[in-house]
Image (cartoon, rainbow, N blue to C red; front, side):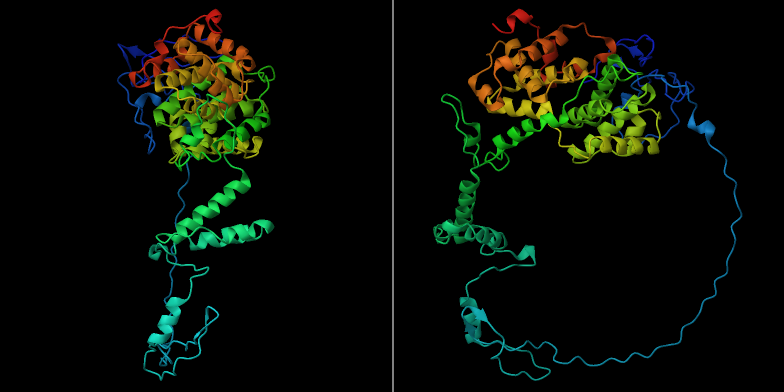
Length: 499
């Protein structure tokens, strides 16, 4: 999916990455300048001696620095001190022999003997009435006691071995707490004690009855849908993967948490950074996400952590890439099933930082965000709105391109993620000439068109800007056929947005 980009000329005060191009493919050698020194430049005939990290990405061109040569530090190899070999002292260990101990074995008494059983009294079996068994004989339960035990109703039974669970005992442990909670609700005890009976699967009927009682008590899924709006949650009510019972409540809760993660205009306080440096960093983070094949949620959370950290801490330009790498490392641990190893992130930074530096930056970011990684991101809102309105995949992919391209625009940092998702979806619908902001989108998003008109214009202006060669990762990514080549769709003017 990566298409070759043009050579990047050095700019003051930032020296971005130089890229060598041959034809339509990028060379394995990138004329990247390590942040430690210029001595590690590669030529077409040279091969980097450093061993590639385990589980590193398949792409060989993923390793590069995001900012270029931004420090004058020397290689760590020149700073290594030779360690003196000290002679090893030989120690002689004398083997001590312990005196032999005589072990005495006693015969086990009452082996294989069970305590006697008493008849069933009030549904409880007591042990008393089995005949005494002499030593050396096994206790055999009479047929009468076996019949009495089998007739006892199974109340609050627990099985320690999960592999021996049967249809009768499958829900027994779960029903204990549910029945207790319903019985403690006062007036509803009588209704809860008489669940509907089912001869084939009595336990399943009890579970469905209890679930219905809890649903009525918690008032889940009782959302009034306007006329003409498809009830997406009701249509997928029986799908356990859709969590339709409380999906609306989840996203309403996420919208209420957006105020906790508002980001102000922080670039004026950053003495050593510029918005161009941030755009270069985000472009590099997109390339990391593509190289490791990470989830898009990981990318959005990583960018959000970068902005959240920069809005509260002052960072030098030599550590900006370290902030981006540590943020992606944290986000991959949070969202990925198998996150990349720490050596992989050190490798893609081209040896600019050590393992200790990356771990310390990871700790600093977690402390700044107070270990609260449940940040609402725009990508989750976009998927929810598009699915509820039954948007086709090409339109959703176009909205994803608009949203991901806006990550590099510093002007979108202060906008809330739910509004960014709504504006990108609306702009995609207008570019495809399908429809405007429908009543279904208005209901599920909670926004009217007037609430995010300025955001739509902001995103459209960002698409009309002339693309720069250092920031072509997102455009090249969505120019591929797997993404329906949405980056090549003709743009529209601001006058056509609200027609």
